Length: 124
Image (cartoon, rainbow, N blue to C red; front, top):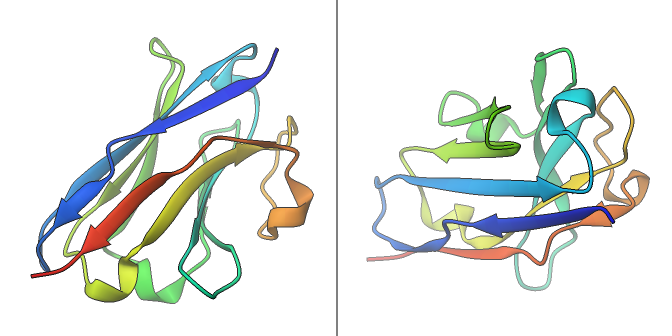
């Protein structure tokens, strides 16, 4: 059974950092693409970044380039999203997802397996 569990969200001041974790079960993260998405209140879910099975990654949002980094720990079967220099506009529920394919896709509707999400709030 494919499962994804996010953790690591919370309340952080502007300029702070968080590291989100996405721990998988039922499949091996090293073999498939894993995407991070976010959804702010009243907005559509948007792709943030994605890690391919090859280890290559894509950052979809210009606003997070240079601040967010996606990575993987095969031993822990976990994908991370390191978020630095956080801004209030980064406030959202963050989700990880997989389509059990090798490559990444930017649109949420392409992904069939989702975690429950973790809230990130950036506020002073």
